[in-house]
Structure formats: structure tokens, C-alpha cells
Length: 459
Ligand code: GLY
Image (tube, rainbow, N blue to C red; front, top):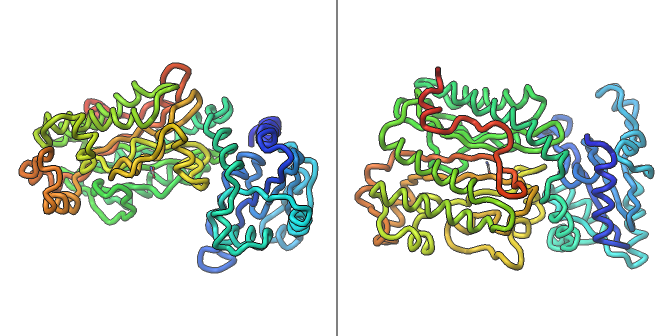
């Protein structure tokens, strides 16, 4: 964990924004996999990690008018027999600057007392069933009402704090980018004819696990890259395929990496693949060059979309004017997702609070247009934001067929030419960017990305 002063300062900043209020934080419990004693790998709640740093199940905390109390139980002898000696709750609490600890069961009585005294209990939206039920019990609500009654002032304050990464967080993310690099280079080395997606998936996840970190989301490793989040690993690499790998790792303190690379089998592009790949790379580079404090990520997304539209016009797949194409949303046939999202303790950082509140504000509103509506970050960038830059081009037969049958955007889309791309798959190229005082830079060493780097990869 970080130095205790980091956690103390975070809690103080939060308390200043919610002066006099009582804030409730329920950490995660162990979750049963297929029976109670067989559990998923434990993952602490990110808000709890951010404010209290303790990476253990069944912790909760209250901040009452700036005063923090941790609620947790010391291990029983039985726990020690099964899991070995454990550090006491008070020692862990002291290591993050909290001096008050209470048995876990007294949380209910303390919250009940606060409610009786007319205090409002502020909490963030829970996303696990058992936490929803616990908060429902603590606050005497129906479980269905718990998410909707989460505290908007607390959410806003946490988004403001967590959006701007502190130097210690940037160092942690930058250090761990080496593991993200290793995961992708491992996959690229294996992109040879006859290799199975399963084998590559295993090698990617192993590169994360051996660093001590879980993957930050289920690895996407597929020759069917046109399916944006393809979680099946049943394919075998064939000559002419493109292998799309979207994968990331969690650092020891649970900060995520998230990168995507697309590699032609045997590191050999066809001319058709090369043309589309270069358009996606141009969009990625244009976005990285445009991202800086003060610009909206919506405008950076639209810039990347225009680069894609122009590239597709030049390739004869679209026609017309790139600005018209993008304003009307015709490019979303090929780029149906957003340019990127915030990255931090969560791979889609803070998305449990509500992705629209994280990525938009009073000034920049979320669009409802197909494709653009999937953009998770649209608001103005600030120094210290960490975000992904991940344009892509996909040829999705079902979407092509639907739009063609509806005669959609026939003024922009060359459906005849598209017949030659039905089995193309998809290309996405994703880097993690830190917004600096006057621009943006990739966190860590850039994973090989140019056509030349990929074609000479085996050397
Ligand atoms: N890279 C996976 C995701 O953004 O959901």
C-alpha cells in the first residue's frame, strides 16, 4: 500500500467536501464460486482501496465528520489454522492512519444510532448482491432502492478526487505498464499459424499472474476481432487471420493496464489488412497528439472518427465528406464504440459510480447516437487524467447486412465494395495515456505498433 499520509490526505479532502456528514464504505467480502468454501479470487472494492488501502475481505468503514473508524474482526484461531497467521485489524488500520477500530457487527448499531439522530447516510452505489443487501439492512431500505439512493454528493466528490491521478498513482501505473507490455509481446510472439487462441490466452494471463497481479478484465484474444468483446477462445490461428488481443493486468495495488494490439498471423499483413491497419494507427496517433488539458475527449473522439472516415473514403469503402459522415454517424458501422475511458483502480475507472457521471458533466452531454453513445469519456481533460486511446475498425457482417437491408447511409457507404471485407475481422489499437500539463504521453514503453515493427517482430 502507499504511505499512510496518502490515505489520510484523501480522506481529509473528501471530508472537507462533505463537512459534517457521515460516509459509509462497505468493502468487498469473499464471493462463493460454486460453494461457500470455494471462493473467487478476492478483489477489494476500489473505493475502499482508494480511501483505506486495506486489501482484505469483510472490512467496512465510516467517516463521520472527518473521523474515520474501521469495522472488522481479528482472525479467529480457526482462520489462523486454515489461512495462517494474520496481522491484527488495529495494525492494518494504523498503517493507513486510522486509529479507531470496532468489531464488524457494531457497524449496524452505529449506523442505526446515526439514523435515529436524523443523519443521512452517504454511500456509493454498490454492485455486488451481498453489499446491496447489507446496505439495505443497515439503512432499512428495500434492496431495489439501494442503488438509486446512493449519495450524489459523495459520488461527485470521489469522481473529482479519483479522476486526477496523484504522483504515487502515476508511478504505480507506469511501473506496472511493463507487465502490460509483456502480456502483449508474449501474445504477438505466439501469433503463428496453427497456434490456438486458448494457448495464447493462457500465456497472456500467465504474464500477469506471475507478476502477482490478476488480469484487470477477462482477456480478449481472438481471430474474430469484429466481435468487440469476444470472450471465447475456441479459434486456431490461420494464415491471413488477424489476432486481436485486448488485455490488461492489475498492479499490486490494483491499478489497471488496458492495451489492445492486432497482429497478422505470421506477422505478415495482406495489402488489404495493411491499408485498414494504417488508418486505425493514424486515428490512434492523431488522438494522442490532440489530447491535452482543456480539450474535450468528445472532440478527440470525433477527430479519430474523422481520420477513420477519411481513411475509409480513400480506401473506397465510404464516399462523401468525412465531416458529414461523422456528424451523421455513418462511420459507426465500422467504429461502433468510444475512443476511450478513464483508467485507474478500475479498468473503466469508477464505472460503478455511473459511467455518465464519470465521463460527462453539465457542459459535455452524452450523445444517444449509435456508436457515439458508447463513448465513456467526453468531458474536458485535465492534467493527471489517465485514459485509453483505442480506435478501431471492424467489419461486422450482421451489422452490414442490417444497415444494407435498411438502405442506411447509402450516400456514404459503398456496400458493393464491402463484399470484399466480410471476413476481414477487426482491428483495434489501444494505448494508455497520461494527460500532462501541455499534452499527453503513453504510460511506459509503447508496445510495438507500427506496420514495420510488427512485420519485423520475429527478428
Ligand atoms: N479493454 C476492455 C474494455 O475497455 O472494456
